Length: 208
Image (cartoon, rainbow, N blue to C red; front, side):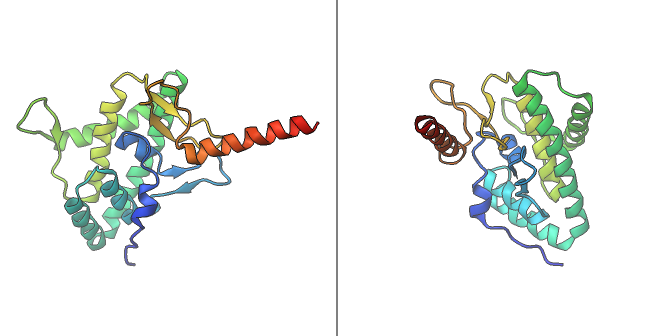
């Protein structure tokens, strides 16, 4: 079976998090509404195309991994399953951070497993500050990169981490607004729906 290429327009529509790990978590659309939930990385090609669009991989690396996935679809499918497992753990870890709850040990164990797997394969770049680098040659290496990025993100203070307040959305983002009061993933999406809802409620109230 050939690998289907998703459109870059579809991929780019999820890049609102302000960090590659949050954008990865946001590849589930309508995460908190089972009636509308959709996976934006439904196959290995979509995962790798997203990795290129998000900046996790360079264009050249993306093309090379897409070719590798076509040559070894079983390994590509394994990478997709691993990515989904990591993403599920990240959803719960990020929810815990936003809600001020202790993380679940099971989710920490998942992230730790992926992190250690990546760390064993990493080397330090010849520059300061120190930063681990991976020789990216297989689709699974994209998942390893995400594990390294996720560990770094979750090792820092959670003050700017937010979850969209739109009903059913569940997308995460870093609040870089001047007032630190950003509520929505996108003002033209969940923000606009909330404005329409409030207008409707006011209209009903005035008519009653």
